[in-house]
Length: 347
Image (cartoon, rainbow, N blue to C red; front, side, top):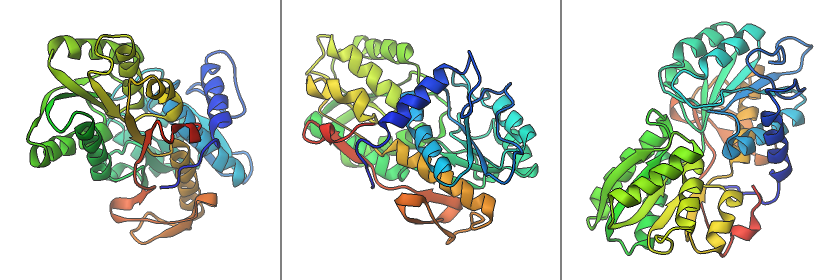
């Protein structure tokens, strides 16, 4: 996996400022569903619109900043749109608007594997290339999926970390995002099997959903500790969830007693690693993920690839990639962050 330190911090800040400012004003780089800035028309520049699960999420601030960097490199027109909250169909209106605006490519992190399909296929019929990233939809509803890492790799590294941190024995729980999230559910299913097959002394006692909302995830963490007084660890495969759980644990009696791991960004988790709340967590570089997704979208629009297995394209400074089975492109393997290396990264 290619993790690049101190590269997307400025872009992430700009993306956050842009996303927070969407309600109040227009922008050259971002627009809401009702804006005219989705990118249709306007010369030969490739128009690429990013649609995260929801605006204001630091993970997507960083991934979409990576997408904007790529679009700027190849001289395209970038936009970011999205709902304020996560729900199965909250992205539908944004997909419909992008199609009406005639954008060349739509890059989507799906909130639901099926609920978006009608709108995505209508957009494709209208000529828009559809690339999913981070969280896939049904493969029949998109042209290409940019996978951050294999589901098996993500699930295994999380189980390995919690097993190491609790001595491979005791009760654990999972704090996930939305109950319908394609990627979360795939990881959880594999984690359940991995625990059953290889960690017989670890018991998964609960799986709860924080809907990628900070306060909900914070409250779910408190409830887990109340409902399971013998809990030894929490796995949170969501950047919002793990940060909220760490915030709760850091000021509770459970600090240092209940292990927490999962998927997070270094900037979110740095303080909690330094104060001992969290020992280790994992992630890929979300900036690289958005960057790769944008270049893949460009390759589709230009006709360099079709999404067929074996297609090859170059993604700027990330180098060459090949399309695998089910029209999937793999970024790389998860990377573990801990007190020995977290200072080296800024995203």
